[in-house]
Length: 376
Ligand SMILES: Cc1ncc(COP(=O)(O)O)c(C=O)c1O
Image 1 (spheres, rainbow, N blue to C red):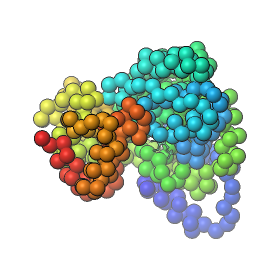
Image 2 (spheres, rainbow, N blue to C red):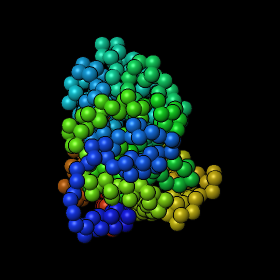
Image 3 (cartoon, protein in one colour):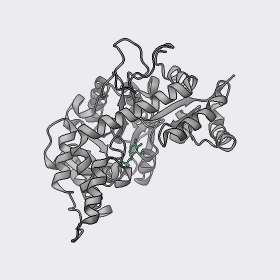
Image 4 (cartoon, rainbow, N blue to C red):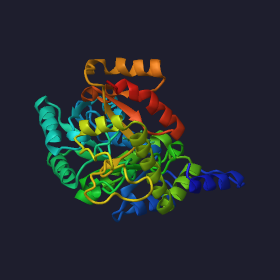
């Protein structure tokens, strides 16, 4: 956990006196810190602090998704979108992604048309960029096109951007929905769980039009009242120290990609080839571990990378229908845990999600054990 949060919690542990509730709408300091971090001017009613972005998703789904409607989400995509749609008795509909897991507005539109044809009005469209599990991004034009599509069809657009601060290399911060299409385009999710390194605090947020957040606040308050007070204060400490915390987190993630490039370059090359990323050639590393940016046009693999997941195709000749069986063999024979891609949706078959998180020594050991499965 980054030092500002630790210091805050230590201070709280030494302080006498009551430990109050909420407040339900969260502390004004935390709301202001979220607004300050978001990048566009916001009013208080346009920020909803929640118990992790997971609780923001739960509240938004229960406020806006009608039984019998369709919810569009990425396939492969973060599993909560599908299960929340089912909890709301809606139909989860996966849309395909472009090369490298990138958002492709045409593919979202195709899924929307298909859902309408099947008789399901579309109540919500969920985007996730940078994406879990693929690391895929969204460009500003695609975000604007999806926002227009949702506006035309009366669907609530939710853009899950919890990994957006974890970018690596010269590409800079990936596009965000509100910067690309304005606040009215939909709701953007953020969290202290990823770049701020504090998932155990359980603090996240939704930012968007007040009228979309108001009914979701009712759900969230009924569910949790508010995130725990010490967590709210520690999250405030993190957000107000973003200038110190985020560059450190980005350096740490860059280091993970560099470890991968050094220990198992063939795995990185296979993942990049499957994603359609150019081969940087033998001389170009990820370029950001030292804090230096690669020269423009150097073709570094780091140029548009974000997050800490490697989306790795199965070894050539392995049947995609056996994705889970392959992941289990790797687990049982090499004691390395990966997530089979089809756990994220049927289009994830043929891939494994490899996390670059955890202690670096364990990452190195895991990669050393993993690499031979792709040899030959
Ligand atoms: C894409 C995505 N969204 C949301 C979440 C939920 O995160 P949290 O509730 O910790 O903010 C996760 C967690 O892994 C995630 O990967």
